[in-house]
Length: 209
Image 1 (cartoon, helix red, strand yellow):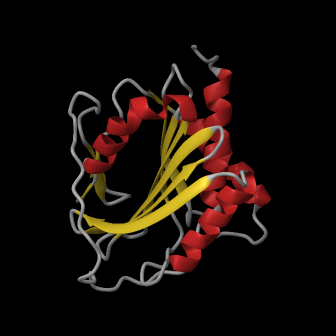
Image 2 (cartoon, helix red, strand yellow):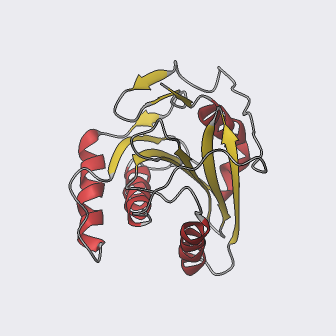
């Protein structure tokens, strides 16, 4: 069933606010440990647009094909709403939502955010906070986190199956990045299987500049 235009926009705002509120303010960048696996994603060129470079983020990535790009004003609105909810102030520019994409038919959302500093030496505490937030929203949710390397970039991934949505949180960190980059994918649970290859293709397109 086709959703109204208002529904995807409300989902986008909610997702963006949650993303920024879950930022962490610590950072270290250790050498790649030998016991962390390296994974390669398969990129289906039919599911993504031409790859684009973003010098501010320090990465190349391919947006999902056929998804609507979220207007810049909506991204800034999400940031303003987020700052109102934060218990302590964050310096301007520390956290910035750079891109948002909405799938018109289902209201699924993809966002790309530059985070405040993220502890890459031992992110277990931070990932537990992410997990706790997901369980607070839905105590019956299934939450799983993993750590791996992709194209030499350290990746922290959190997968959450709730009664309503399926969400991926994927954080890329590297010595060559000015700040960690977070990709979020949020899908209504019933349509998630349709977009599994889209998730893989978008993530697989990410490379360092």
